[in-house]
Length: 289
Image: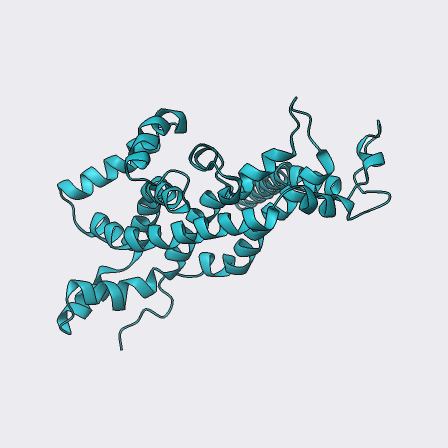
């Protein structure tokens, strides 16, 4: 009996180790798959023109150069475009979070027609492709005199990111213990005071994660910016990157890679800076004394 149990336990341990090893290998393969385009982008950004045209490309540039970066800044107004993207992304993220936080609280805490309708809107809105909404959206913004303005683009980004922001924040709200709100009510706090003083601080990781999502979505968005912004002075960075393509679709590969590499840095730096807060405990220290 004991030998049989020991054998089964040993077999179970080996199976568990094999399963974990398989999971780690799958995760490693997925990370390599995700990292490959970015690593190749960095390599291309630092290669001189002679290496870019080589029939035998290499991972590491043999003669690294910064000429692609200088050429990119000389050919296109990257700083101005980056400033436009930054204004649009930051404003859209802040507005979306301010609007979504109280709405997510209502969705999570109240089970009624409003919460049901909001949940349905979240699901349905994500099914609409950009091409389907661009014409009515263009006409609405034209009537509001917001075509070719950053505020018009910001409004579009806020509306487009709100459904997912609501869904995301509602999940964080549901994870906040209702006992904390009940304790605040016993102390005489109203709904608004409870939301601001009790719930909102505990939602900090969720708010940061939602703002990050809205920022990255707006920073990387291309289609709406291409359609709504006409003058070069107001175009965002993703639109300006397309200017490195020639009339026949031939890419100026070196400067394009250099500009694209610079365009990805803000998202990477921002995520690296706040990733601990995103993964931090939501209710750490949430004890009523």
